[in-house]
Image 1: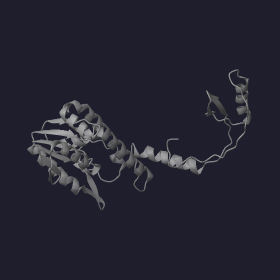
Image 2: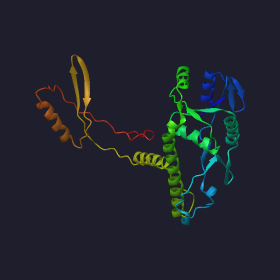
Image 3: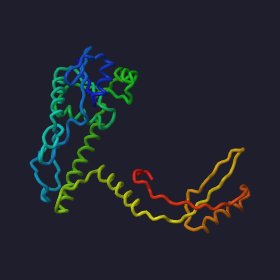
Image 4: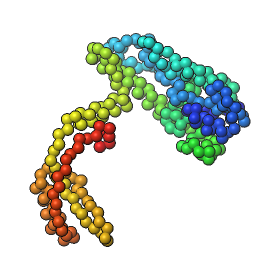
Length: 283
């Protein structure tokens, strides 16, 4: 029997339909020599400081740099403490039983760094040694799945991808845990959180909020030309904004003096400036 493990149930169902695994079981689908199971995203995560015997936020404990990172099932908060997510534990038990029974594993987690990490963390946590192949597809059409299954690649070919994902995961842990604890200790009260993705994103949001709140309209000038080419009319506006009308007039004079351009009319138009949009961080 081969076990195919997908990243989420919906993908597992699509693959199961192709391989003929139509018999529904608890946590997987079975049939035609296959068992198709799934994760729920990151079932396995890096252990927290308390799992290394480090409790509380204390300056003398920093920096926290584990000699070897421990893996644990996904945690959920229970009061003031964390415990293993019951749903994750149940699915891990299903996956472990299937891995123990199978001859070979087909990795069908998402084609990318995080997808590779999700499988490898499960594989390592369960201390599995079964051989595995990689299904690498970017589409879930029937044709793409069939073609991918016909062209499975040895799992070892993706070791470097896993190493990259593992390095990113551990680096995020080191930065997030140490920076958060250091900030909390320095503040002297409360628990403050810093992270590689979270903090820059929050900074962008705060910056845009302040930009919107402190917005003050300023007068500026742009040059706009209405022209035509082969009976097709169109307008062109300068990307540069001029602080004074005199600067804009200087540009107009240059256009007037050009032999290739004929200025028919010049209009002046005043428009109000709108504050930057709060919800658009791309401008």
